[in-house]
Length: 240
Image (cartoon, rainbow, N blue to C red; front, side):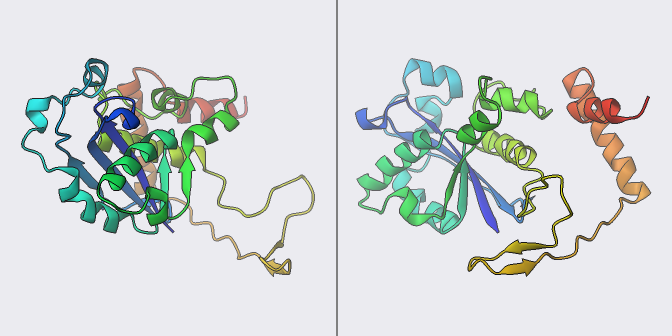
């Protein structure tokens, strides 16, 4: 399954009043694995950013003045996104801006060009009601280091969101729920007929992979200046 994690930066908060997209960043997932086939472009919006927006992304009018206009990157972006499932944090915001850009060029709306859209903000609110669910808050909750994020950037935020999404949806690979009864041996197909579940193959990690895992955790501990969430959870799960 091909999924695209998408983020934008804009000149302000209101596409209807003329604010424009100034950066698009996309990260590709294939079968829940990062592929490295990313899309990223800065865009000349042909207008200044509002003061509040500039403080968030730091992309000045001077920096953007020699970047391509949206019309110059739109074909490449549309080909990249075509029919993919798209993952966005607070999807109405980004889709509203992209729709406005497409409308200026007499192109179909965003959702007419892609597959289903997943809003991770909606997911997070359902999973963590009453808690902060900004991207920064979710990074902290799932032990994902964002210490290198001093300003918002579309590609960096898309990369962080990809990690957050994978962390949020671990355990959703099964089509059935464990309700405490006998292990499930079949699932209902589209026509209601019971279809046997495939055998789950467990491949234990090699010693080399375990060593790499520990090295990664050591790095996370150092960046977080403490114990990362993974080690906290595993330590609490160990018998006394």
